[in-house]
Amino acid sequence: MPLAGGFLKDKSDFQKEKVFPLTLAFCRNCYLLQTREVISKEILFNDYFYHSSAIKTLVKHFADMAAEVAKEISPTNNKFIVEIGCNDGSFIKSCLNKGFRAVGIDPATNVVNLLLRMGFRL
Ligand SMILES: [Zn+2]
Image 1 (tube, rainbow, N blue to C red):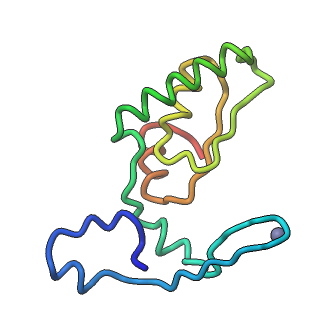
Image 2 (image 1 turned 60 degrees about the vertical axis):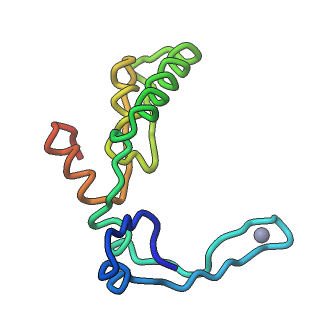
């Protein structure tokens, strides 16, 4: 199985595309379904192609969600939001705009480096 998001353009791209085994494992006790194989983080995340801020409807969704959270939980200094898989920080930025402290975690090195260049801190 090739990795998602290859967006190949011509036949030579297809020949070079890497494929990986994809074995599903199902637990009859708790109904967990997961893949058996673990693709290394270097292959998956060193040059990650997806940036959530490129999808304007998603950016709006995150802004709306931050507004909803702010209605339910007043932003104060002793509370903060943690987003695991924050990508390029679209949701984190919306949380900051609402006055929350926020922390994002993401394994995509190139995406996180973009945030660092924008002034976000490690
Ligand atoms: Zn189980």
